[in-house]
Length: 245
Ligand SMILES: Cc1cc2nc3c(=O)[nH]c(=O)nc-3n(C[C@H](O)[C@H](O)[C@H](O)COP(=O)(O)OP(=O)(O)OC[C@H]3O[C@@H](n4cnc5c(N)ncnc54)[C@H](O)[C@@H]3O)c2cc1C
Image 1: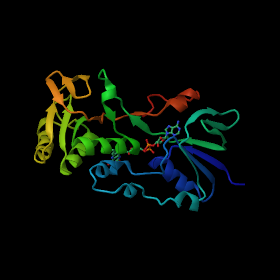
Image 2: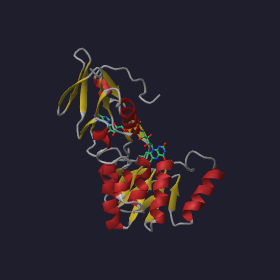
Image 3: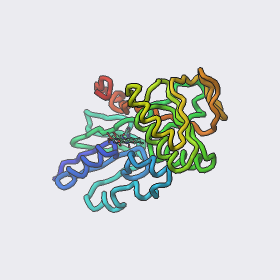
Image 4: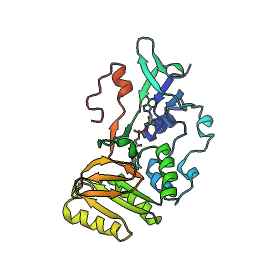
């Protein structure tokens, strides 16, 4: 009988592991999200309408089935019962011989008060919501100065949207002033308005209140990086350290 491998997480890590194991093992993939594997690096291209949504999915709908991978989407893993070798999920129990957690990370939440006025950006659901609001508003304020914020701002400006980028540090991507200045100029040349060295004090529906004054804009999206998804492991008594390293 084939060994039953249960993988939690259908991101690139989980899906590639499933692909590698599926010829010799009975593989089940469990993921909280309700869509098959998609490319996160392409999300800002989709939001800018450079790509249709179906291009985000590298594998066809029948891909999992052809490999005999049982896919359980929209299902959250809650607890691991290691004594019984069972994964307890919100839609039932899943027995395993080997369990692998590839639970990745989630978006870091904004710390400003009234953060319900700020959206986060990590998943396809986030991207769909932001795209819908963007098409209505025609403008966006991106919070953050890392790679994801920079790429998002650049693609949306190229697509013709009015884009503001607010970052509490004075330079982008943790670079020195010279290199950061070069990147800034590149995005300024396509219309991005920069607010570097700017601390957000409060968010409201219509604007951001910062230590350098008000920045208008209804659609505000935070791309502050990620925090590891360690809840399942911690709740199950597994030591995680910092979760990421
Ligand atoms: C907009 C964007 C652009 C990016 N661009 C690049 C790039 O250009 N180059 C690059 O190298 N990286 C890029 N990244 C980062 C890259 O996407 C991540 O490094 C990668 O997704 C990590 O893969 P993973 O499989 O470890 O985890 P994740 O992709 O985070 O997947 C983890 C999965 O586990 C699921 N999960 C977690 N907990 C549970 C639970 N309890 N129950 C059920 N399911 C659960 C989640 O729903 C998720 O689907 C980008 C990320 C984003 C958001």
